[in-house]
Length: 148
Image (cartoon, rainbow, N blue to C red; front, side, top):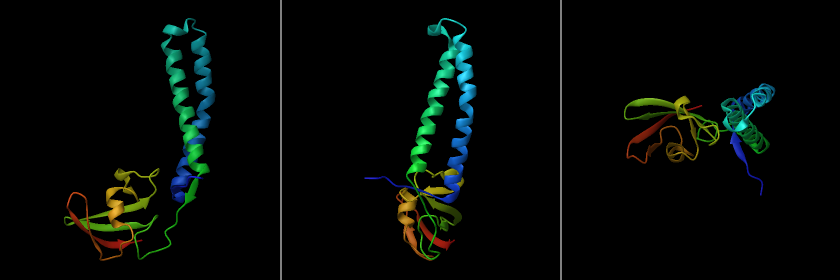
């Protein structure tokens, strides 16, 4: 069964940009490996080991991004009255207003206000409307004040 990975249009563009950057790094890494090889004994060659480790990390990330993009399903906020994937939601929790965008797990970054639909806060808000209240796993209560 084909897996589907939810991404916003912006998230897909960020991954494509990262992929392009990583692919552009390949020649420089290959050159570093060749230069380090010329130093001789590879068993104690820190430059060689470092370049190979970097190559492995870059190639792994390239494969990961290619897999994500191959299986990506672009999400769009089609509802402005319910919390759904792609929605930007303003909530009030303990008297403080906070804004979150509901995204797929791959794109989630709480420090940037991007939370996954499967995160604890994402789960309790999903499907709710403006004015609805919710309770977080830690017992704090919140209220949806706006959905864009």
